[in-house]
Amino acid sequence: MTDGTNPPSSPQPQPAPGSGGYGFPPPQGSGYGYPPNQPAGGGFGPPTPFLPGPDQGLPVMPSADQPDWEAMADRSAAERRRKRLWMIGGAVTVLLLLAGGGTFLLLKGDKSGGDDPKDVADNPPASSAPASPDPGASSSKAYSPTVASDPSLLRDGAGKTHIRMGPEATVPKVGERYELRLKGNANSYAQATEAAVDTTKSFSLSARVNNTSPAQGAHIAFSQGTGESFSFEVGADEVNGKQAWVFRVRTTEKGTKPTIVTIAAEGAKTVKTTTVLTAVHDAEKKAIALYVDGKKAGEAQIPGIWQNAGPFQLGRARHDNTWVGAWQGSMNYIRFYGTAFTPEQAEAYRKGELDAAAKATATHFWVTG
Image 1 (tube, one colour):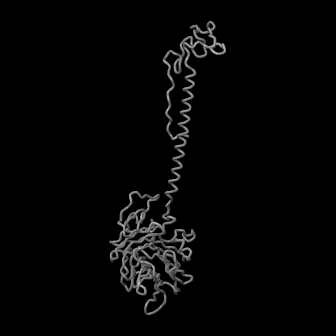
Image 2 (tube, rainbow, N blue to C red):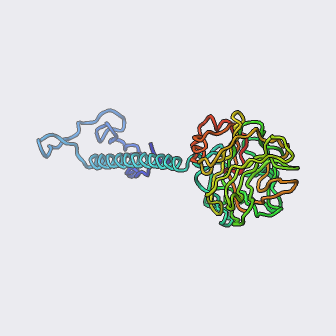
Image 3 (cartoon, rainbow, N blue to C red):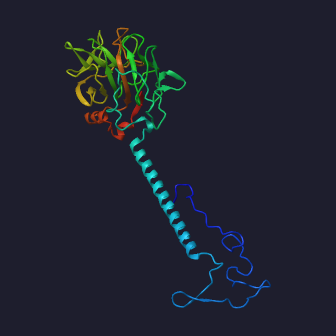
């Protein structure tokens, strides 16, 4: 094996024409295999005179017109040694290159399909950092968070529910990851083209969020519903005089006013901290639960979640025919699954170790690369 190039070689010694050496015809009467002084007409001439040998009296050929066979043999052996060294060196080089390439592939990893095994826990969105792409960062796949034909639409990586960004919403790349950034005003939101969740069925939805507003009150990361009211909402809100992460649903219970059930993660930091929020609805058990960074913050029994035909929302929620809870900050890894996570699955999801059975129920992915 070589490295693809021919090793350098030293040319063979070239005797002058007429000397009978390599590459030239032997002169008449002194060719290879013929005694010197052969007659021009062919045949063997008189016997060649021999001289006594220097060691044991053995006869030796006169050396007047003979090549230096011993020197040529030495040069030929040296040439073979050089070729062997080049071949060995080339083989070692190729093996080192292959080994280096294998190491590079192992270090680089495979991101195909948009699911980094540790993507939920690693590389949090840097909401306070400027939106500056890292020219040195590269990926094994050409991921884009938006629809190719319309950069204002967040692309659904697992379904067909794209999300239209408001005029002041952006989706910059920070390092190797993208994140949705919202400014906390009426023009900074994103709305899907349709409902993303059938609230009569089980689901688990999660996002990695970073709220940068220190103000008290509602800061909604995502919700569903338009018109009169939301069906569900997830974000931060004031509970018992302090900010807390919340999962809130409007139930199917009849009454003069909608019945609202809230699960709150009181005591958790809600400002300028990257947090994975996971909301779970178990339609069979008629229960909802909220997980903060994989840990259960609370659960509640409900008769069911009111079904609103309105679309999925990012950065706001509908209350009494009004948009409220404008989100200031960033979010990414917005994912929906068609099953109710168990506590073990919710924790595994946070660690990036969700089992294959739960992964197979994925229904929507937004801003996941």
